[in-house]
Length: 629
Image (cartoon, rainbow, N blue to C red; front, side, top):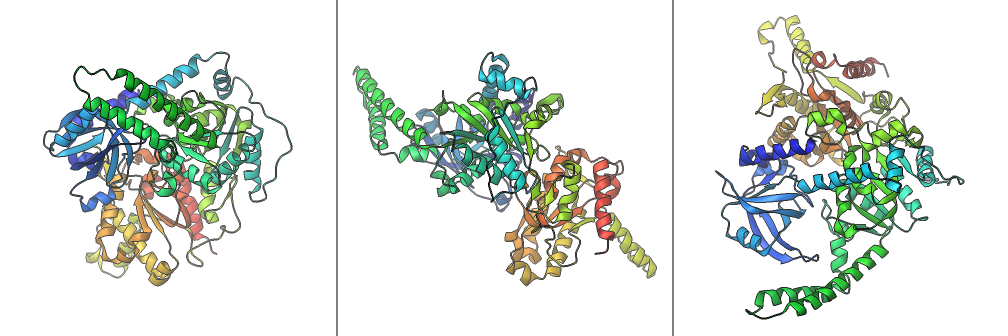
């Protein structure tokens, strides 16, 4: 169902959506220019594509082009005609990408095209890979895959090894317990890491210790960014990592442990390159009737021999193979098996994607938090019927004894953390002593709720008391709809957010704010609201000195990040208590737990308090605000 929904969405984008809207959605670049073309280290024909005529607002748009994504080129803006081939992103940076082409004819077509553009293409390959993996898992009999399937479903009990627990003085008690549980697990273990509890630190330690017992492990995550992050931490620990698939954060440190970079820096690579070049030249320059098949066949055999030798050495030297879940189906990993598979950010991974990598492993360690962001699913009915439930959630339900909760958080002031701990983690998460009372200003409430209508009412009541009824303010804090997608915006609330931030910076003192390098995050669940807020910050002179430390994004854009000060604009304000996807409380958990020292929530209490979560949250904040220090 999800496959069909995404296919249909792509059809609509292709046939009905204008170029400008595609650009703003991050799925299209126009106009672009085809630049240098060459054969890369994997003998693929690639071409560099750069954006032309960049617009000032381009900086606000987060494009969705990344390694492995299929794309399609088109020409002309008014009635686009698509070139007769699809390609794949090799890597993408801010305004430049490298694209793998299927043939030299495709390059000729590109170079001859006028008014060239590029857009994301429907990713059929990922779905096919997931379908195959599910078939393998369903049909598995009398093998390790069948055992793991039955254990995850709760039909068999996971087994543990028994040996004396190891001590890790640099970890806290629950982190130490989690690492030991990973080492003891024969089949499966879940490291459940609420916000700020050091999940990555724990996972890196668990991988490091596992490598004292095993020669090599496979480390995966749903997104390239998550794979990059864990890979970087492992490299910092001195672990040799081989990254399959190009990193999304392109820098020298990241590139140096990619398969491509290691492959082309191998001492035997120049010979391989020379043979491949010779084969290409022989094909291009061959005369009619000349029989060069045997020569080419001999050269190809030699090239394959060198390639296999380089591959064998690269895999022998690596202790960790790192890739996305879908990337684990890469032909480079064909027939590779691993004793242990680690899946990071497992709560954001679709279950079918997890099975792609699980086929290669004897035991599985999952790390993540199913109370934070869920996987992205486009088809509501597919989500309702179970696609939204991750493998991690199923294991937590079916095998609770295989789950270790990390219980000490190192990020937030205690008052910011406590509501999240009570609602999502049965009150089990506590604050480390050094962050418990952290704050920006002395004697301030670390968490506030600001309701535009309440402020308006207070101002107008004060004006009435002063006999200035004719000066009463009339500001509409209702939500509005933008475009056919029903993107929601609340401009009055956005203005209130910016005024509050300006006043708060002044209260801290501009010099102190810059000297101590406070950073600010403005979050809204609604993309249109974040775009409007970004635009306003860029326009306003009072924010000029602070633009570098203010970031505005959706909840998804802030996953895994933290800021000293967080302002959340909830947008929803209507007469019938409709809150839409604010009812996905996991997103709210992520938004609230990004703040280290100060959290300010903007929202219409009247609209939101009909929902039990928001009703309780509003009361929690009011109790803090009314308490005497």
